[in-house]
Length: 253
Image (cartoon, rainbow, N blue to C red):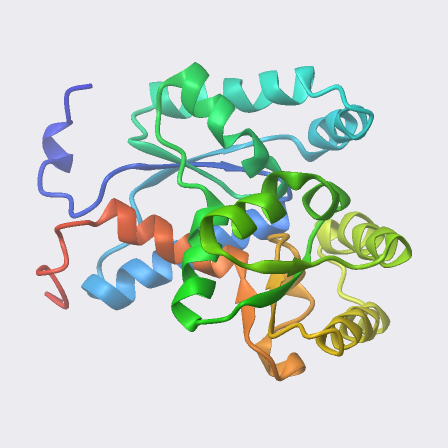
């Protein structure tokens, strides 16, 4: 696609964000990517991106089908979102959801656009910290399906600790009933902390907040162990990738 005249001096590729899953974490991506651009390049800079927000009720309906093993409609919905962003001028895709990064490969194959995988961003950060045994919290799909755990183990050499079935149900319910609705409950924060502390007792050296909503509830300062905020790490990685070669243009204003 021919670049528009007014974008020819841009320091950034165009980021295509698939959001809405949920809107609460999409807000985090919007804010953090703009803050990172401002901090790196100066006060007048902001992130160059498009966002396609999936209606959350549509996602919730398809998530129930996916939980039964039928990913047909979920895949079609995500491919459609990526195609819209590509048609709008996006240079690469960021999926603002850990769970839906399980479809990154399918999107790349069917749409022909690079997807900046959140698991690689998180895995690279853990590897740099030198940790070996980490706790994974997320939706049931993220915790139970092999796409996240296997990639961390096979590509980054990590041992991944997963909560019990009862704990996974609890974590998942808090995500969908509270956090996706931007509801923060202190009792739920304490419940998450109990689960994490139990797994620290099993050797967990750090914890992956492997759902982009979880950092709305709990952060590094509440835990006392290395905490990997997937939304934050992914936002930084998106700006890193979008601005490769532009780091000499800093603090012009």
